[in-house]
Image 1 (cartoon, rainbow, N blue to C red):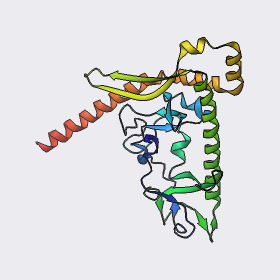
Image 2 (image 1 turned 120 degrees about the horizontal axis):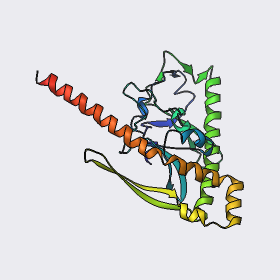
Image 3 (image 1 turned 120 degrees about the vertical axis):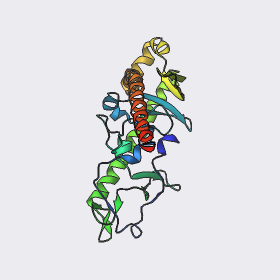
Image 4 (image 1 turned 45 degrees about the vertical axis):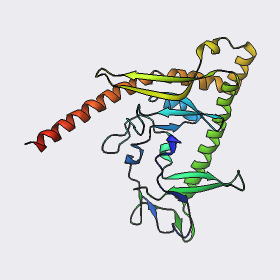
Length: 255
């Protein structure tokens, strides 16, 4: 799944194997440079739509709301070269790194906490301990609560988006972006709310979607689509900057 590409070596957190590791508070997010999209919970939408286009993807018969960060695969236009996040809002999916929950195969209600052992923030010299005297640190307990809350909110969001799908409102789309220099990019495999079908809903269905909160998700999603133009602008700036850097390198090489 594209949104999980920031995790290189996720392993289950182990009290013995990881007893000495610490998580530094370094705010650099270079790990997210290749994260083109991320799952967004309904509770995040009010903030997320200020910066990102939010669409839906289908996975295992579920529709997931995702924020798009770039026009190309493995591209995130909201992380600069120094690793700083440049958007106003940082999605919970990004903030939870280097941790990720995994469902227990024997009990779906139990969550196994995993950690990306390739994360640069992991060390043994500075930062927050995960375990102290063989027990969870306060930092780890708070992290687990955060992961549980995000999973709960994501599961709830999937249910709300399912109501939109069941009402026949989600339509698969393909977007083509053409830049002034002639380059073009395609985004495929995503779904948006069909405004024509939305306007033709029966009063009963409209009320039910409004009461559940699904209709709110639909309108926030539609409002976010204006940010696709922002992505084009950011991509154009990125290309201009990259071209300039390449030109400088070439000039130095031939000097």
